[in-house]
Image (cartoon, rainbow, N blue to C red; front, side, top):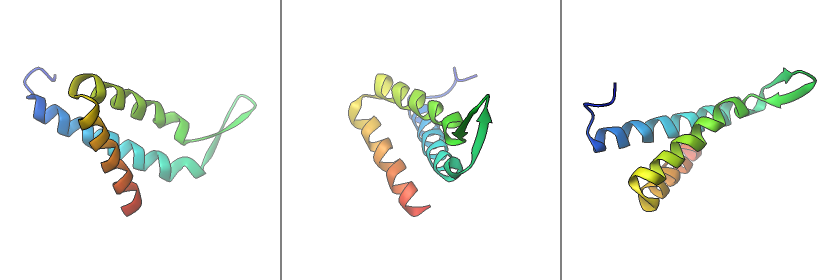
Length: 80
């Protein structure tokens, strides 16, 4: 599926997924769901995706580019 993408295109996709998931997890963090007898915020469902994407960005593109994506996500959270 991703074999025809260039490294720049994949970086753009991962950046979009990271920022979108970060904003969504912060928006739905106020809602809760019951998991057996525990009440958990809905943000815990999507937050692992953020961690995995960030780890892939760091491993493939390096610390500096991953840090830029994190700062972009922070800025997008401020805007939203």
